[in-house]
Figure 1 (cartoon, one colour):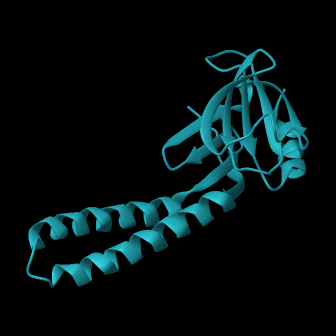
Figure 2 (cartoon, rainbow, N blue to C red):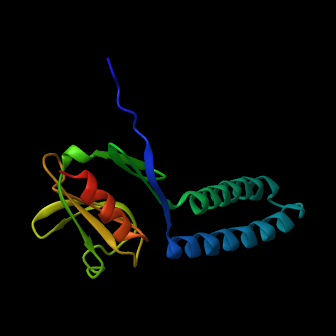
Length: 168
């Protein structure tokens, strides 16, 4: 039995600027509050309660930093599939599942939001992997739960060229 090799031909990480800024602000505020709590821990009254709150804020800070670091849309195109991934969700789409594709550089209002979410656009259920203010690639899917899949990219023309070569 001969197997085809699935070789990666394109990779991209699309950062989310506004989420990055929000994460930095949240981390700074959490750290400032934590410093105030640590100062308060050295007073004799209510040490245990403040210690619990300090631990909770440390956890909050750790989660903020983790989300800040991993808040990127990762796009990987191989010879057989397109893989889209955020921290909490990954989807692989075979080229045989794609009916058509196009580039949407104008409709930022239709795809408003960040992250991975679903929305009905023009009567079709759409799975969106979005980073704000970036052009989108729209994939029309032959069958399945979603009629379309849209994702942000910084290089829409290059991805469209790859799709034109691979989608039949």
